[in-house]
Amino acid sequence: MTESPIGVFDSGIGGLSVLQALQSALPAEHFVYWADSGHAPYGEKSDVFVRQRSLAIAQHLIERHHIKALVVACNTATAAAIHELRTQYPQLPLIGVEPALKPAIALSRTHRIGVIGTRGTLGSDKFHRLLSSLEGQAEFIVQPCNGLALAIEESTHIAASASSEKISALLRGYTGQMGAFGHGPGQIDTLVLGCTHYVFAQNELQTLLGTDVQLVSTGEPVARQTRRLLEAAAQLRSGPAPIAASARMQLLTNGELNGLQAAAQRWLHLPHAACHKADPHV
Image 1 (spheres, rainbow, N blue to C red):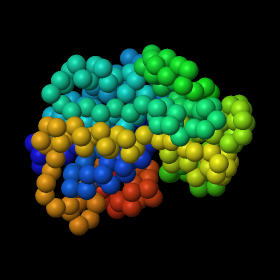
Image 2: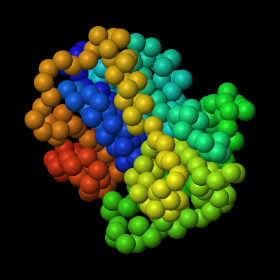
Image 3: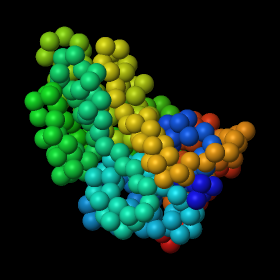
Image 4: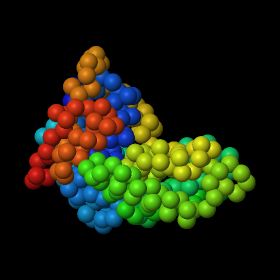
């Protein structure tokens, strides 16, 4: 199994931010990434639908690509489906993502922390259990951001100026509802990006909120956990890394291929040839 790839999936291109961290932390490993863009965004779908998609994709990656581990690079899918995936595939190392509240507590000085995410993630029982477990350690200002993940998804295949304007307008609107940002008393000094898509808007967020505000995402902790689980299972690939990242990356989508190609080139510097149309029957 050491030579088998690691499977990664998300509702669309957002999980590329996690894949970016994975390829950096695990330079010898091979990856198969599934962008379920044909069914995006997950955050505005029912839990039942998200579980069905997660199980179908996992089954396909296991049976067709013989993956040795699975990274659920989507907060909504993790909240809705990670328990069922672990029950269904008990021998498979499974890594989910969740809003990085604990790291944010360690960083915050004002103890007021903002959390942005999809309605599906922030309304989930899993997220509320996480919040309850941290009661008294900080004040969390939680803001669902309907439409933001989709706007970032669409930014790869519509005019750059129009997509940037739409994303910026959504960011201004949602952060404006959360209160004052900064490092002064009573201000939000740390913002948790509770959706993997949002990492691709972090430059706009930093400009909007100022450099005093720290942005926290989940890619690096997920990559570290993936490495730990593979080491524990003696499944780390020990050979040399391929010269080109494209030699160890296979990206699949059931959405628009040119959108995934543009995102992969823009954020992972991968050639178009690394991206393929996914099996339409999954």
